[in-house]
Length: 112
Length: 118
Image (cartoon, rainbow over all chains, first blue to last red; front, side):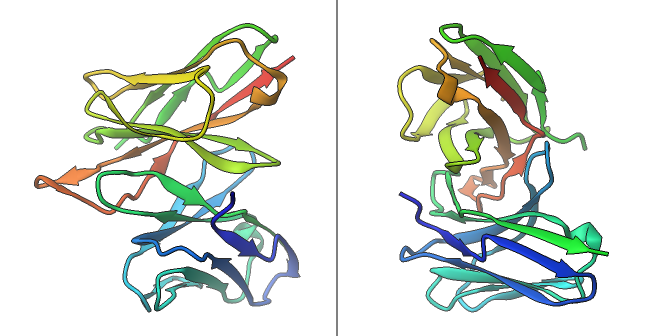
């Protein structure tokens, strides 16, 4: 059972365009993390959000945690070829466990 | 600070064999989690260790096992390999506790071990 659904699954855009990736669940999470993964490598942590409604910015990337802590979004402004990769959201329940529930993933290709 | 290291990076085995994968967490991190990544199922949680104790286990058969040593290094073992075990196996380390309190479970991943079962 996949608890975190990401959309879109695939996205191919031109350099300079903006995009938004969505991560949705019917479950509440205590934290939501976003990762980017490149072929043959492990996921690299981009950001962690923990408060409902929280917005975090990382250069051209803006992350938002839904008010009810069930969903999140990642917005990229003026995408660059270096943004190409697999974007994964992952929800944590907190407490005495580090188990993460991963989303289905969004494969982004930014064409120069 | 060195990141998470996993060895070996690549493995080729045949059905029925067993395999042991190793993970060294970031210095100071006491929690190690293992995940399996496949194209069809994505990233799935295998198990988590903290202070040499398994804290949580995913929905995988008993052929998948793991352990953690006193220096926080961890190994996972898969016995009686099946074709469907071909995957990228990822290890993630986390601080888990700071000043005696559980902290947000930010996890840092290693590069993975690519296992191919023939």
